[in-house]
Amino acid sequence: MKRLLKPLGLIFCLGVIVSCSKKVDSGTIEGAIVNPYADFNPVVDSADVFTYTFQNLSKNYKAIEWRFGDDSLSTETSPTHTYAAVGDYQATLKVTSSTGTVSRKIVNVNLTPANLLHITIEPTGVTNQSKFVLHIKSHIASAKWTFNEVSPAKTTTTTYTDITPVITQTPGDFNNFTVTITTDKGSNITLSGNCSTKGFATDITATRINYTYNLDNTGNGNENAPKLIDGNLGTKFGYYASFPEPLKYAIQFPGPVTVTLYGIENGNDSGSSRDPMEWYIEGANDNNDASYVVLDHIILTKGFFDMAKALGLSDSQSYYKFWYYPIANPQPFSWYRWRVVKTTGAFQIEEFKLFQ
Image (tube, rainbow, N blue to C red; front, side):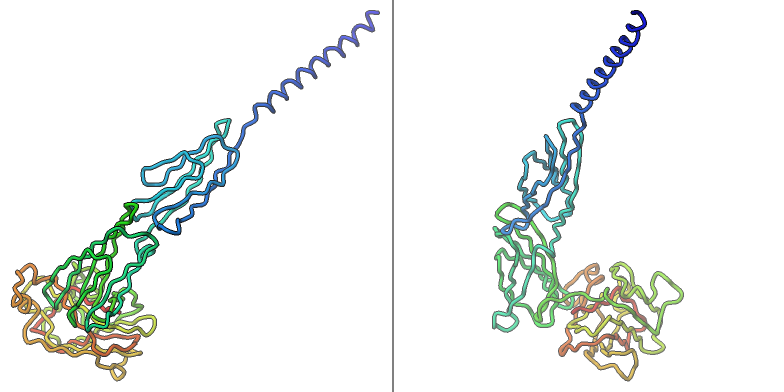
């Protein structure tokens, strides 16, 4: 009898162990971790470029939090948000499951002025008069324009509050403008540009693929020939003696481009004693002397500094000043050359720019 009880006891104990094991397994299943999945799609409003609807595509979550990258947040499922200004924002979605596990997703929202606002200049039919038109997928509540009309030296600033101003420009002048608009939702955007009576003027100097020069300041690397087109208005090309031969500074572009005007920023000291006095602007499709065609020829009777003083500018205003010259009959060329044949005995220029 005792021999029978021992096996039965063992069977009973095994049954208890198996039963307990099942209870433990059952408890683990009931407390399983829930992993959420964060996903969303930002969709711009067709009527306002600053407003986005953030379409929530997340799964397995209990709580949700949005941060739009401009110090604002929301706990709505699929919120709509309006940005107050242009900028690069990081929209972040955080979802939390019922067991406390977190998932995040980040999407960049880039509001770049040139991508949101477009400006066209439309002739009115009146000589030298144009209408400036704003194009943006938002309702414009107000606009403020600032125009700087630059005669070769003196600047006149005019402001307009018309959303579509009509501007009369002086032939040969170079103008820069800035416009700030405010939408009906309070968002702001500012855009700047350059123009003349021929329309927009875009600086293309930096798009060059090559440049050559025949004269250089080998004794001073801070004022050598490359500084003439380095895009830094604080550097300069100085040649502190009479030219032994005309300066030939040639710039190559990837293909033929039509330059409509050019700008020269005079030096920052010595009055007019280091100014160019006679030069040619030339175009060609290869960098050979025989190929160049004359596009503009200027002879000055006085230097830049003296001309600026005659216009009433102070000493400080007479330096670091751009002088702009239009090209009467622009033609497409891949090479453009500034050929300076006469100076006041030396040469010192801050920057040379070509505009399309």
